[in-house]
Each structure stands twice: as structure tokens, then as C-alpha cells.
Picture 1 (cartoon, rainbow, N blue to C red):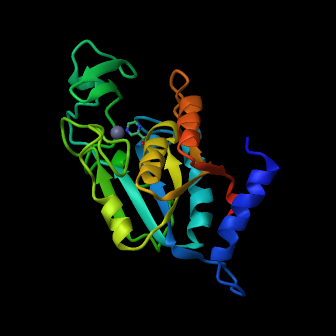
Picture 2 (cartoon, rainbow, N blue to C red):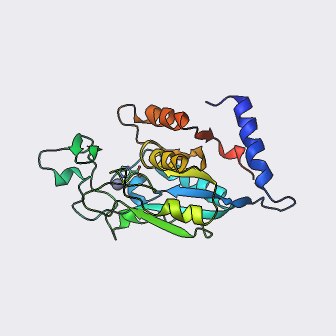
Picture 3 (cartoon, rainbow, N blue to C red):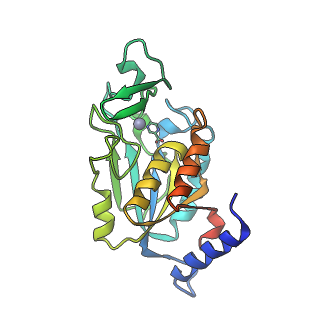
Length: 233
Ligand code: VGL
Ligand code: ZN
């Protein structure tokens, strides 16, 4: 948990961005809301369901009303993707294997291009979202991050997109905290963006301590862990 003083300093950093005397205080367009993988397969009933993953939707919908710049990421795998346990005979979901680019957790088949599971949650309501960045579509490379694929060198283009639009700050939310949210937030920070993660707008898979490690890795990069109440509105 973050100390009270930290919360206050973050609130002070964010609040001046709101236009005054508006019913819905808006956050400056240079702060992007990055909504990670709020897709059916990561919610209860989905193929890689994150516990209470569906609970992020209402929180994100409320946050989205205050942002002018909103980007969605969408996990988007071809059938037979190399991150699927079913592509590796004798392997089971959640086992670790070595890929040419490093260790890879094997997952149940999920977010297959064009499937119901790959669709965004129907109750996700972000009319102002402008861009969808699909990732994980190369058969041989996974991509947790919305910025750089798992080989750690293939960019998706999101970094350039945000830079060209003058974005200097990223607020990252979605699923799952310890995989795609964490990797996306870390790459946002490495791209030079001030990066914040809204705790209750995320839910975790939590595999072998992955959640604690994710928060520690994010903290080490200066990523701020905040509550929705620390943002305007
Ligand atoms: C994710 C595992 C595999 C995520 C995506 O969105 O966190 N996790 N693919
Ligand atoms: Zn995936």
C-alpha cells in the first residue's frame, strides 16, 4: 500500500490537469488511458479467466469519462499460437518453456483472432477510445506488452503513436495486472512516459508470486500505484 503522503503528491500532480469549472473534469490529452486486454477470455467464463476480471469494467468505464486520449490493447492470437500449451505436445497450461527469445509461460488457448473470447467485453463503454493495438498475432512470438513484443525488440508502434501525439503520461489499467498490464506499464515507463497504474482497475492471474514481483518490478521503474480516487472525478 502506498503511504498517505505519496497519494497526496500524486493527486497534486494529476489534479492541475483538469479543466476547471467543468461538470466532468477532463484530464489533459497528453495523458493517455491505456486499457489492456479487457476481453471475454480474461473474464469469468473465458478460456483464461482472471478471478473477478469482469469487475474492472465498471471502474474503467468511469475513468474513461475523464480522458481524451484512450488506447485499447487486444490480445489477438492465431490458432496454434506458440504461447498455447496445445502447440507443445506433452506440455500443460501454466508450465514454463524456453523459447528462442527466453522463458515463456504456456497458456490455455485464448483470444483467438475472430473468436468471441477475443472480443472486448460487451459492457466496456469507452466511446472516446481512438486506437486499438492488437498484439500477439505473430505465430512465433508472444506479446504481453502493448509496446514491444516478447522478443523485447519488435515494436508494436504504440510508442511512436503516443510520442507523435505529444503524450507524456500513461495511466494503465486492465487485465492482467501481473502480465499484460505490468509489461505494458514497464514499457511505457521505459519509453519515458510518467506511468501510473490504477490498482482497482486491474485484476491479476497471480502465478507463483507473479503479482508481488510485478508490483516490485513496476515500483523499481518509478511506476506509481494509485487508486481511482487519486484521479480527478
Ligand atoms: C495475458 C497471458 C497471456 C494478459 C495475455 O492479458 O495478461 N496473459 N496472454
Ligand atoms: Zn495471450
